[in-house]
Image (cartoon, rainbow, N blue to C red):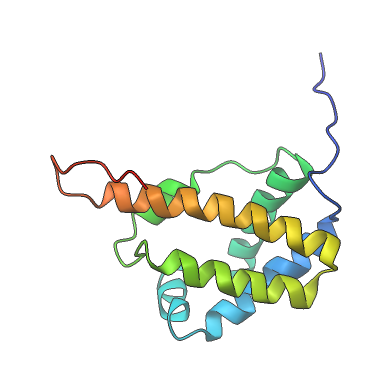
Length: 137
């Protein structure tokens, strides 16, 4: 039995997703805070952008081409700090509103902020000393 085809979460096309991902990572590479970290870990930018575009097509268009665990990837990189996620998301929002129409940018930024909050919490929790009380915010 085949899976039902779900409508997109909000109006977005694969080309818009690709444009956002490409523009965002061009901005990240130039950023004083995030650039050095990404440039240290990403050795093949086209492959990275393809993977992230696949992640977003899965999250927005419900395509099933992405497999991975972005939470684990960020936890495994000790130079990725929980406090960096706010800056990451601000850059993402800046680029989205410059690259996309409002009916795509606004809900995408909201989705990115929800995902980012979960990633930030996961990274913070993973960095807690053994036996420390859980972070409940």
